[in-house]
Image (cartoon, rainbow, N blue to C red; front, side, top):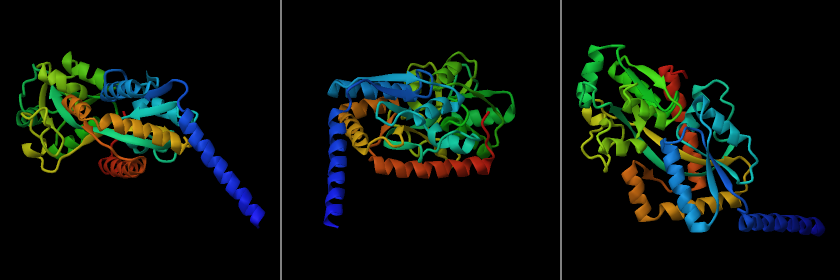
Length: 322
């Protein structure tokens, strides 16, 4: 019995020693961060800024690889099937927790196939229009759409994204008839509004903040519970006649399931250092992001809640992917 206990103790010691050693040696080569959207969208903007700062702080090498397509499923599935060694990570917006309910055979389970590192930021969704659009505020927007059912299209970062589901929820609550045009990411969706290919856009704040400030697009309403500090003149949907209407886009930083906890913790610590800096938080706020410092454990709990929430919304409203 004593020999067995001793043997088990040796095994436990060796496992702990290997875990610590791995954390100390990691990383010893570049780390790939897969973003399942086209360049220029909010995940891309946030990811490049975050990992550039981590690189400056640590000397680690990160590189972004954009893998858009299939409502973000291509990039998400790629990471789910990657080697769980900490050298392939995923940074996705809310499609990560929406797709399993929206898309038949999405090919992954948000909890089972991934290990959470952090949910480092979120952004309210916003309704924007081309400056030539007849309506100049949200109340005029509602009246115009009701007077012209089926006439106007709206863009979103893709089928099943948080902005698209926010639009569909608004259509149901306000009895609106507007057609959805899906794009591969926030950048192309915003460009469609800029070029007036789609006069209306449902988007997350980044990268729309700068375009609104520059007068390139007109912001009609945000979907947060309160006005956004960087855009104080834009009202919320709730205060404009639809009480309790709220929606946000969360950024999910994930690793493949089975990634050593020591690596998860090391990455989380570096992210916390960067996002704990007030100058960085102010910069992100000005770009449309709200910083979050959830632990990996808290992030996993939030993911389960988000999957359940969107599953209920999608089922109740019979929403389908395009």
